[in-house]
Image (cartoon, rainbow, N blue to C red; front, side):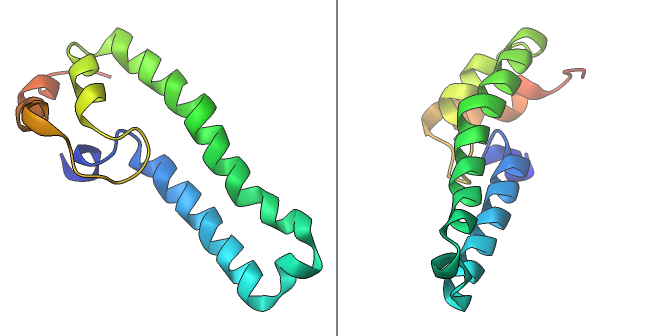
Length: 100
């Protein structure tokens, strides 16, 4: 429900978007050209979240939440993207009543 219907980890997407915005400011101000190492932060954040954090959290959720594998097939792992297919329409009933 909400952003979680569009991304399994919208908070991670927000964090990566923040760093990408900083990178945009760095390029527009000339700072990234003057100091190229400043341009490394945003791509590393995207890589870290996609390669480490998302798989770890998805593994944890698969163990704790019945039907989470269905949600994983329907919902984007990181980017805010419309849910896919018939699975997306059944999601609200799958996640009701889970406990964290």
